[in-house]
Image (cartoon, rainbow, N blue to C red; front, side, top):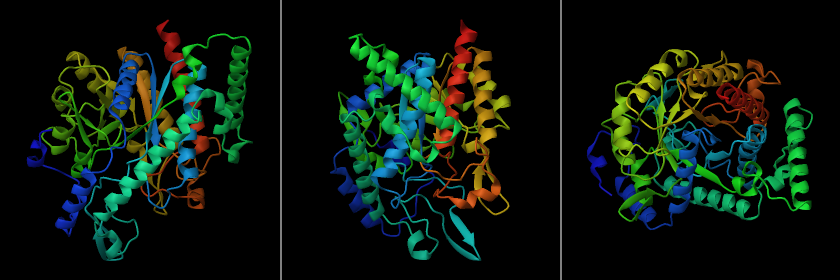
Length: 447
């Protein structure tokens, strides 16, 4: 793989005090096994191609930033359960195959608006994710430490091993839908609605088994066999250690899908040059500051063959900009016959700050942006291909609103995120039903 990207402008990189140690660890990581396989990457790319053409749907979700301290089997399983539950709701109601992609097994790096953080006249480097430094606000912990890259690798590998183990045991199959339940919400409205669906699916599976009937694809157990991994390709030296060459093609085997963030997608940047050489499906975050004239160049550089499934636009415009900007972006894509998968990230453009200093998001605002996303695509006869959420299986209080009407004053009860606020389990289920409803409306419109 060409290393031209090293000569291009590169943003959002930590300032390592000990470059010799950093290079030693990078060389060490070059010798480590890859985290995902080429066949899995190709499989996901095919699924994304289907979704881009209206034959599937994508749910991508997980933590804003994974942390070393929150690493345990229960936490990982709960994240997987939420993705499975949301997918089951959508797939059962709409009969559309749903591909699940976790922000997992590698989301240890975070871009920052400012290089430094100031508290009580103390100025320290910003927290850039556990793979770089610690969220603890002291001089030693905030110093970028290359040894953390090794821990990020090992925890990513262990997470992928757990996901594969769950898959091999059949945990992700529809037959085990009742084992995906999280007990905290048994009295909630959306848990009860989900439980009705789970029982109906169980009855269908039992009937088809007893009657020796072949199951339709929409409820096939094989559909739910895989949860793919994704993260932002931020620290390029780290990502470069996972390059695998096969038949003159290059795959980044740190994750199935990588994305480039709003802060690093400059057309002449090292990040764009790096991902343009990869066969992996690539996501591009599209925020309100996007130069719409760059869109054509971005697509042609990353996806020169203009194939479906290669490039996803992860739209993060926010409720204040989506109605004005998304039509312009869609028009530019259509005028140039570009093949992209349209994903909506309704989280990042809708972050607000409470009087007590908590970053949060309003459930109703998130919902409104999703509805606008679907309505605009309906108007332009394009395909809303999926949603990208920051969410957790834990009973956190980080986003206000939802069926339990979490308020500003409730946030401090269980505010656990290392960076940005996430939907909790019940809010995620509520979103699952909303998405299914919007997909059903879209299907009726097209009939």
